[in-house]
Every structure is written in C-alpha cells, then in structure tokens.
Image (cartoon, one colour):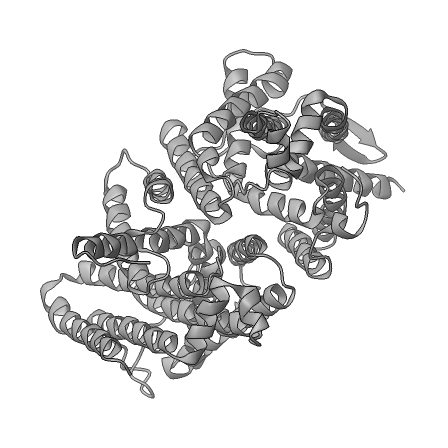
Length: 288
Length: 330
C-alpha cells in the first residue's frame, strides 16, 4: 500500500515535471508554430537566473517565481525581435536559427560560468509516506504544475489578450484586418512562452541542478510531448504529459532510468504513428 | 552520360588521386589523421546533403547512423578479427536502422518538422544508451561497449583476408579519400538517373509527384536508407581514425553536421563537403583558443548563415558568378 502511494507520487512528479518543461514550448510551438530549438536553453537560463539570485541573497521563492520567468521572458522578447520575427512562416529556417541560438547560449554560458553543476537544495524538507521518504518539494511541483495549467487556461480563455492571441494564431490576416496589432501579439506570446519556460527552469533547478548543457536533456522530451499532444495545446500537452510521464516513470521503476526514458520516447513514436495529428487531433478536439 | 557529368566525375577522381598521392607525403602523422577525420565528416555531410539538400528530408539525427556504423564496425571487427566482414556489417546495420525508422516516418506520413524531431530523439536515445553501457555485462560477443569511454581498442582496417596486415594511417587516409570520391560520384550518378529525378521532384512538390503516379513514401525511404548507409561509411572511417565512443551520437556532431550543410549549400553535393572542411577548420581553430568555446562559435556561425546567407556558400557564389557573366538564373 505504502509502495503504491510512493509509486503514484513518483509518477505524478514525473508527469508534473514533463508538463512544466513542455508548457512554454506548447505556447511557442503548439500555438505559434515556431520551432524553438533553444527551448532547453531557455530552461537553463531560468535555472541560472534562479540560482544567481539565490546566491545574491534574494529570497528563494522570489527568485523562482519572479526573477526566473521575468529574465527569460525579457530574453525571449529580444530573441523574437531580432530573430524569430524575420523568420515567421519559414519553419526550417527558424529551426536552424534557434538551433544556432541554442549552441551559442550553451557556449557562452559555459564561457561565463564554467562547465560546473550549480544548484541549491530543495526547500520544504520531506514527508513520510509509510516507510518511504518523499521530498515535499516534489509535492509542491505537482501543485505548481496544476496551478500553472489553470493559470494559462484562464489567461487564454478569460482575458482580452487571450482572445486576441487565439484569434491571431487561428487567422493572422483576419485578425490584422480587424485591427489587431498581430506583430505585438506574436511578440507577447513568444515572451509568454519564454517566461513559462524560465519559470519551469527555476522550479526544476533545485531538483536537477544547473549546468550549461542541461537543456539537451529536456528538449527532446518537451518536443515529443507537445507533438504527441497535438493541436489543442493545453489539453494536449497535459494528456501527453500524463501518458508519457507515467510510461517514463513506470519504465524507470520497473527497469532502469535509461530504459524508462526509452519507454517514454518509444511510446511517443508509436503514438505519433497511430495518431499523426496528436492526441487532440482525435480526442478532446474542441478543447483549448 | 552528359559531358558535364563526365567532366565532374573526372575532376573528382583526379582530385582524389592527387590528394592520395601528395598529402600522405607532405603532412605530418597527426595532421594526416586529422585530415582523415575531416574526410570522414565530409562523407557524413554528403549523406545529409543527399537526404536534406536533395531529398528535402531534414534529419536532425543523421549521427544516429554515423554512430551505429562506427559501433557496428568496432564490434564486428573485434569479434571476427577481420575487417573484411566488419565493413559490410557496419554498412548494413545503419542502412537497416534508417530503413526501419524511415518506414515509421514516411509511411506514417508525418510532416517534415516531426521527422526532424523524431530523428533527433532517436539519436539522443542512442547517445544515452551508448553512455549507459559501462561495465562487464554490456558486451556483444568479445566486444565490451564501454559506456562513456566507448571502445578505445577499435581495430584498424586490415588487408582483406589477412587480419595481421592492418593498414597504416597513411593507407587509411587514402582509403578515406577514395571513399569520399566514390560516394560523391555515386551520388552524382544517382541524381542524374531516374531515381534522383523523382526524389528531387518529390522535394519540390510532393503532391504533384504523387499525382503523377510516384509513391513518394517509397522514394523517400530509399534516399533516407541510402543516406543511412553513407553515414555508416563515415562512421567506419571515423572509427579508423579515432575510435568509437558515444560522442558519435551526440548533439554536438549532429548540430555541426547541419551547420556544415547549411553553410556549404543545400541542394548541391559539393557544398556540404566544402562546408564540412571549412567549418571544421574554423572550429578546430576555435578549439585551440582557450577563451573561445567552439559551441558558441558554431552557434553564432549558424545564426549568421541562416539570417544572412540562407542559400549557403556554394549556391550564393554560383549566383554571384552567374550574375557577373550576365547569365539569368531562375
């Protein structure tokens, strides 16, 4: 029984982590159709922003919830302005340019901070589940992931910006004809995705540690999650996170971490083969 | 065979012959081995040039087949103790892997972008897997896989049938030069033929090609498998000049590979080869500068290439040359 609860918590943490790392990408790729291969490095920057702030004596929660998303959101705004904006509609070129950005960021961060693992210990201590110890921070992550999902849903469904953004993504020309400054909507949406990614990086920093190359560990998983999710970005990413995250953690639990990861990716490939338009291409079609 | 094609093949053979005759005599051993690595990478670039530039399939994981070729070669050569059997095996394994992956991708009719994501994922899985194979229990026959360290005792090529007569670095360089020339010529011939034309037609307009009765899936699968085979050959050459290790699968190489093709020029066969040589020269130089990080240089180079010279070096030069001579290019 205790084991069951412990495994269930482990699975939910895995799902929450996957959802957190994919959410920003779901906005940038799922909504805007921009392939941002520097997504992993946005996470890395979020992690660094949080760690550097904590090292300079800033409160940990402020660093994670405010500074990390703000810093990466601003950075995203600059990237959109200088690079992404010139390449809208050119998928492959965007992919390559952001890959270049990814490599450059890894290189530059390595040059500045060195190739060492930084980190701070997870706050909140641990909880006891029968004879198993469980980090309370993981529970907090699960809550944070749920909260973020609700928050993003509210922003997209219930705010004026959300309406403009959904309209612009659906038909940019029509939105422009109706007087929407689509350029600005794109810029804000990209920055929002970047900020969500930075937040995820900050939240995951205590668990994973921060290295310049940490992005490469996440990017494939994030992409495969968003792709498996399909067109409805929020529900899709959520359902794909649930399926793939559970497969990954259970695979890890039953065999080894490497095979667990392989199980996650293999399931994703099979899912994409069965549902070429993603989970929400077949189910929950009218969801957001 | 048209005259132009004949001329190009003759030039390629002549250059290969010249390089094989001259370079081993003038280069020091270290430089010669480095040159062999460059050539292996040029073969790899050619494989991507073929499937991406010609076939329009952007594979982010071409290094998967590069690494599989290298590992298959090392494992087979250790087990059979004779590279006569190892080479065909090392060509077959990546070809079959590419065919299997290609079947899922092309017969699933997933779009270009997802092809990129899936190939990337596969190379990452292989990278993680190869890294996790440390320890005694991970061995295939006689060959330990060695995890992070790879297989430092990767055997060299030997004279077929005589395992004791391993080739010298000079001889391996010559083999590499001719392998590159051969791949180039084969690719040229392929493109001139029916198969190549259909592949290009599919790249230009898949729907139209299908309406004309060509099964796009089959042709894509064909060119993708061929690209896997050539990447496997590059892996064999690399294994002979360095040794096989998980880095062969790494993002560092698959990223570089795309940069070589992008900088050299998509749609040409010579462009990727030139791009491979040029960019490697730059990164090798950056590697000797302690303050610079090769990743940063590569990334900035790629961003500049995409933003400033999206056609790539060779097509841009050709265009400029044509304009100077007053030729109107479409």
